[in-house]
Image 1: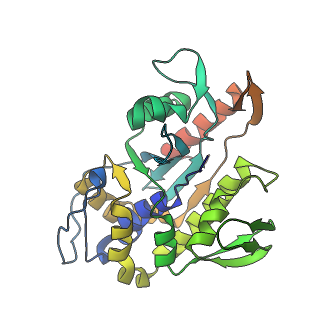
Image 2: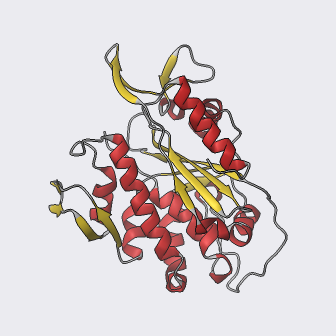
Image 3: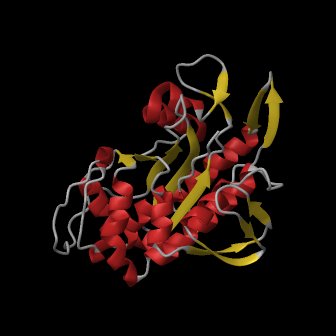
Length: 298
């Protein structure tokens, strides 16, 4: 099954909502995947429509599948006061209770059963928290984003080979990747002894590399190109006013990005592969998120 990853969604959030802020000469509404040019003049700071820590659920979906599923699920916790952002994945095969369904199932199936509303509710129950916003995207814009940034530079610690399309060998050490190479880099799992966890690490590597580029004033020249590359592939319940508030008041959160992992083990039960998370690890994850939201070190 084609796996879908969400770096471009997170990058879009921070690039468009946070890191560029008043640099943008072009602003768009992205709600429900619709673009509308608002102004061609720089915007001035205004009162925030949101305040305090915010939690965002981001999902990467593959809608070419017969039954769409959220193959990537990530939580973004943004705390404006202590200027930090916490990122972590919920592995797609995590065994959970899905509200309104009998028994247990993989968390990514929640999207198939009830779209983003049910995935949000399932994630909230798993994390024992409330989620403020959701962002959903397909994968079509990923190559365009990376190529619009003229590629990304990462530090690779595993040698492996891309054997589809144009072959490429990912040697250990510093690598500069174009959009196609970066896509395979974040999709690859079978050649990685760490499986999904190793793939999650590569997701975060590419994210951080893109965020560094997003902070550069040179990104202004690519603002419209990036927005058009993503606008048709993203849906969010944020309003345009919410996006403006993020842009002005949450930019300092980029100064410190923290990442963590939900520890668990792969297991097959009744012929189905799951990622099993103990109740102790689940509580640890809930506590990490709670501490970040309350401004304490996790």
